[in-house]
Structures are given as C-alpha cells and as structure tokens.
Image 1 (cartoon, rainbow, N blue to C red):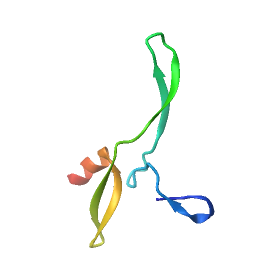
Image 2 (cartoon, rainbow, N blue to C red):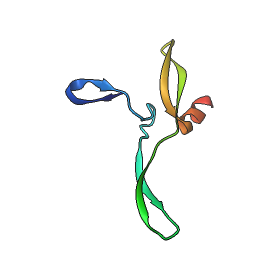
Image 3 (spheres, rainbow, N blue to C red):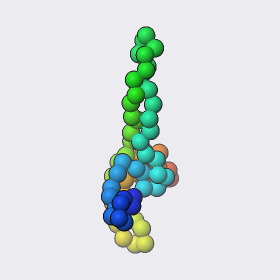
Length: 69
C-alpha cells in the first residue's frame, strides 16, 4: 500500500515486496516513429503467511518465483 494525499492509503499497480511499478517507454514502428506507451508489471495476488497469519499481497512474477524457493 502507498500513502496518498492526507495520509489515506490507496492500492496501486506496485509489487508489495520489491516496489516494481509502471514504466514508460516507446513503441517503435517499422518506419521508426516513436509513440509513448506504458509497461505494467506482471502482478499476481498470492496469499503468504506473515507472523502466523495468512495475508493476501500483490507480487510481481519475479518475487513470486523467489518466494516459492
């Protein structure tokens, strides 16, 4: 969770473990024209055990793989 304005928490497309979020880049056509676009992380919900309680978190695929090891 991320703190928004006035201390209100809001959910966003960010991995809760590593903080990976939306990135910006360009789509490049065959004629080499560039158009802006966004790259979103591969987020997935997973239930993990934290302090003996089951907690649902949003993880990117890389953190999910590392968590399984």
